[in-house]
Length: 403
Ligand SMILES: *Cc1c(COP(=O)(O)O)cnc(C)c1O
Image (cartoon, rainbow, N blue to C red; front, top):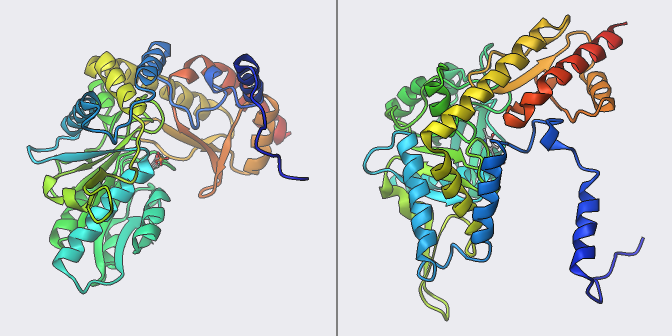
């Protein structure tokens, strides 16, 4: 088939938007809780204020600090609020990014350049991470020339710190752990990894892309979640996704640092071109102001109180799902998660057949590989009304397959 040409003429705006509405109609209906992947929802009021804030700052450019001082202030507020949330001390610093992947990239770049400064002859650096760490760490390693070595995890899916220690070699510059990890929803023993990092003078990055914006509120709502933040000596950087449990617009995350002295490693300055002075923090030059404004607006709108109320509801939805799944004959939960990230399986049944059955009933599910299971990802508010129909369909599909 020939490649379509660039449109020659324009069309009426209404027709174009009509096409978009039509295009969307075949996508998964996330709003009715048919999937818990890809979209995190904190309620219609939260979504509305995020959208309105995004619209207000749709055209502004966060790269234009002098032109848009309000964007600088909003960004500084969001970073300060996040630093407070993760117990950073007076020297804490941060970098607003477009994704968890970019936050991890900035953290590992800081780690690499910190190590290079001390050891100019270092060559190919190495980071040791638990097998459960997110692939964004490997992507960052690939871009930065850091070898990422994955250590086996324990039977409870948490990092096996002795196994990590056994892999340390003279090229090792850093360690990482997750809070929680994406697969099984458990928080790695960060305090134990931090002890190791301090003993061997290694960087420690905590990937709290999921946990940073729900753990503090889940604790206030009564849940027990292991500690993982700057309150633990030895944690040097944390990645925190605002576009997950922060309920911001997509394109919002932060790399947070224990000490601002590492800022030159993720901020960039240059001057040898016709324009002269050029500076940026993070990967992009031109950056949307909309996700910054949306993050600011949602955080200001909800405050601790609002996030805690939402966390309590999400914990309740997750508890109902867990209890319901456990009660279904033949269904196993993969882990007892520290935060609302669920995965389940049906021992004896191929997971693809279970997914087929659920898809036929209108659910969008994804498999996970180790162990073979259905990965529910992050539970959020739109799943509340879907809990009972979901459990009923799981029970019906599993019963039918067992026959
Ligand atoms: C989502 C996620 C990432 C990557 O973040 P993106 O925003 O998708 O780039 C990294 N680590 C964990 C634990 C995540 O859940």
